Length: 198
Image (spheres, rainbow, N blue to C red):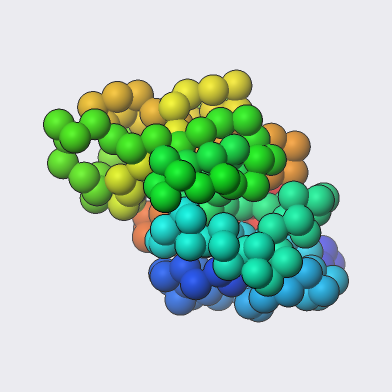
């Protein structure tokens, strides 16, 4: 019988962690909080949750010495919302220098748009294994005021006044701008794919 991975939830003061833990629990996946690099030894995969401020998040990751550990890990890692944005080089939110595991920057939506973008939006998916069992276009739930422009790391796109990156991948790092844990069955399928296939 295949071992079910234990997922570490990276702690940096982010909100919305309970819904991720609950979503994983519904998939019968054990998750534990990760507050220091030594706890990487207890887990098989990592999730950086969303909802927070980029500069404050990076300051906390530095303080806990998780910043370098995340950069160097070869474990599969999924960044959600802000967690995806932190995978890039920098963010306009607080002019934060981020983890730089992917060569992209995060910028603010135009002031002409209502921000944050909050609610369901249609996402165009590629054939990446993170999206196994999903259609080429699916609806996911978003809450964000900043976005990542399209780049060579983009594996899914969405449109909110501008076409932007809805998901990225580079080596063992994946990221999604939306919240799979708030996106019903399709979101659970994505999390299941991360657990089983990535």
